[in-house]
Image 1 (spheres, rainbow, N blue to C red):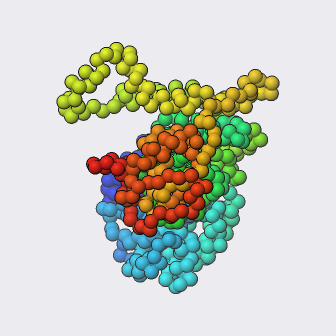
Image 2 (cartoon, rainbow, N blue to C red; image 1 turned 135 degrees about the vertical axis):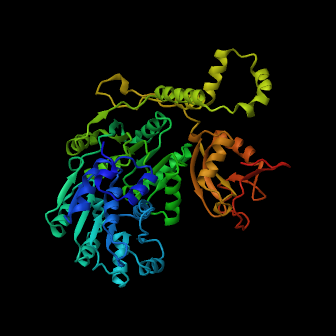
Image 3 (cartoon, rainbow, N blue to C red; image 1 turned 90 degrees about the vertical axis):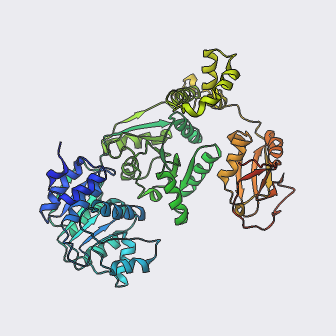
Length: 563
């Protein structure tokens, strides 16, 4: 197995990558690094996302810069702010034990004045998004006449995002460059045009065929009726306990609707789309990166630049228009040598498109039946059993309580005890899925196409008013968790929620109105009583003015129960 030192990398850079835990190079690093270190040839490197492309261009880029020379000698173009920041951070980390290279990240959404000051302080490498770099060049704050090497990272993504004009402008200004290194997961016509116009007899280095998907990814698809797609999505998620997934939708509105419905149904999820403010976008992405968010629902554009190495599943809530987009979507899982699963939920008319994607990407798709309700319950049950079996026990801390525990459970046999422990969470899924219909589509005439609808709450929704709103720091997620986890209202009994600054309106199954009214009467928020009324009687009635932060739901007792 090849070691990094055999590729010609300097010892000080080897120290940096060793400190990051890198031991052996990936295929794209083995292909690119020796060529990039020893020649000024233009390079086209075709490799999937998550295969170590940053080190493949970053290490030779650093090694070939003379640290004594000032001015901008290398430029890396990235499609998104998030990738730009990540690449700049990686370059700094690689050179931790080497020369103190001046690396500056420039991107939209941050202070341009601060970025100009950083560049004037002596930037040697600029990592940039095309739009912000073009702005800086127009202001005469950046000159590219000394740039020796230009890297186009995720070139296909940049062109998909409409940056062709900016890339033409930037490459035209870097007229004294020695070489261009172009990295891309796919090779659409737009990337070929860039190569033809600006690259001189480039070396093409590939770890796989053009547009081919990662071999570490399993491709699965489910077929259902259009109005069953959300139910199918829930079953796929529930049948994979521990799933950590990115769910792709085609439009912003669909993304919002699916994420909101999943939150209402008790899933740890959130949305990422173009209407989010940058601060909200950063917050959602940070939660997902840190594993504090299990399911992220996103559009293709919003998910660009999201680099999370341990995503277990990608779920396509409908197929994308472009085959290249499917390659990028699926490439979000199975990264850094891991395995992953790409799942597509489609209606019958889109099965032909599955066949087309198979031919173009050389991926093999398996058509699978949508899990039945009892199959979901089985998967959840054995996940519970596994969690119990692997649960860490703090012997010293629990020992003082064991006498009382034994006394409380002494009338139960071992078999009864096991059943009850396993039923703690299993009962919740059983209650929901016990009468769930089979939503698979079978051949015409098959009796299994006859469906029995799932038992639900009585279905009569009532519109209610609560004197709680955004000024209290309360979100829809907070309110849903209070209703479901604290007051015991099933997720399917909670309807649409309209959150305003000082109040909210929400739909609730009428069978649970008394339960919620009685439960909320025991809580206060920011020191005032929570009031629940029929919305028709309390239109536009607002609570008292307050800008106090959300202090959790306080139960109206002397000690004050915290929600």
